[in-house]
Length: 409
Image (tube, rainbow, N blue to C red; front, side):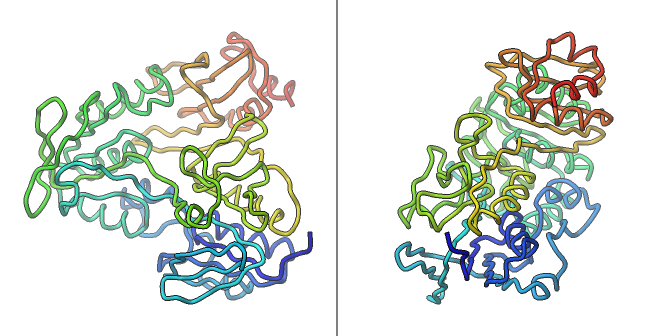
């Protein structure tokens, strides 16, 4: 496969910008066009629900300095929305009708927050959190609010609840499931429920919003159990949907979850088109199935990986999913891909003290690990999960983890 002379990247988030930078680092000297819908230069998302909401900073972690893109010949164009992809002609059309040609195309369009289809959902004061501007607006609103309602108890909802409590607001979290963070299983999810309760969050679990209350501004919500809660500010944090409209309109195949269907090398069925980051539903050789991961590390690592494949390689992307969170005085890292309905939970340490390592096992092998307020064993946990190490519950609870990792590697 001949090296392309012009690579276009649609989406100037972490995955797209990292891919552009990696192309240059690998010595590619052709045209690199990086198109982003936002006016900000590329940035990373984790700070938005953490340090930005906590008012520790007004800025996210930028992917690169302001002048980096010009200095390295990356044509970064902000505020450009692409509306059409022509596969045969290998052209893109943007919202003002301009055309952009490509030899290879990377779709790194990310995801958008899901919303609620209930009466009153369009009232002022109801927010989602995805961009830097979202975070700054939400922070300002929380600082003026008495009652904050968060709908959804996933990672974004939980982090936002911690930030709102830190700002002194009264916080209620509504979640349809019996516990927050259900992907962790009941035992570990209970740790997070109790953490927030101890910090003053009011849980309304196993219930949902049926309508928002108010006329010119949101004033609260009515729940499925018939009760009402007051709110000056509402954050809807009920997950994200991949921005795959371009791919669909171009005729590319989509996965069941709406992500762009790509192979182990992040290439679509159209050989000139690749996808990375939140929008990519890629076949992961280590798991033997297609997965789509919406975390910071996946966007960064896939962006780095896909650069070589855009230049003609076809190496599979095999990295283990990873994310981290900070809530109040709890920090943790999670590696792997567990299914609490299928996997056995093994706890090293004490759940009640919030200092522990949780392992998930299936078929005698480690499928995932989470270290909570325990930091010395991070490297060992990475090896144990990456290698799908065989270990008994007793070994995981009692043995030296560095020794187990050395034996597995």
